[in-house]
Image (cartoon, rainbow, N blue to C red; front, side, top):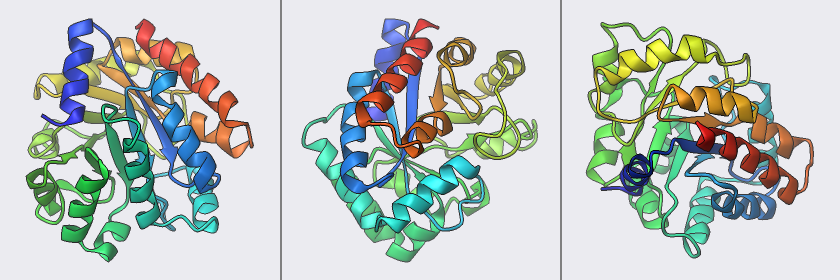
Length: 263
């Protein structure tokens, strides 16, 4: 079992929903980013999604695009992101870390080298948004062989014909994208999400976590109530982008986590 599997088993045993937080590695700079990452578990975060900055983030809205640009401008690299994970692991061996981003930086590093380094640093899973199931041999299957979960996204346009393909090599959890479009673009609706989560859960035993369009504690609660948990990214990244101190950002994260855990 990976840390992700262990975390969801523990939450299930407690009757709790998961709160997943996304932050961009190196945003606004490496020291603050690492301080924030280290503070997330204490703020109630069950799983950390750590963004890999990339120059062409096609699935992301302006908030996360700007975060990636700030990180790149500050000199963040894939190597530094892996070093962040290794540094985090010196003080926390329990919290699952999922690296999220695009295939290009991984491909440039070399898949085999990346997987060895990611595993050694303490990464538990990957979300690579521009690698469809048809490309599983490229990264998904090697990642699972290396002991990393490969988490796939399902969306409102993933129909009954497509869903089995999306689920076939997925592990850890399924990330359901609550809205069509880019991150941070619209608000998620529990009424719309609930039947979609039910549909996905009929085809898999994996937890289904819902992200995109969640930006308040009440929204985190209502979405987590109809799924196995929720993800918040843009709302947290917006606080970082506004120049808030780390303590203030973590207080905001805690309010969201408390909302999800109320569900």
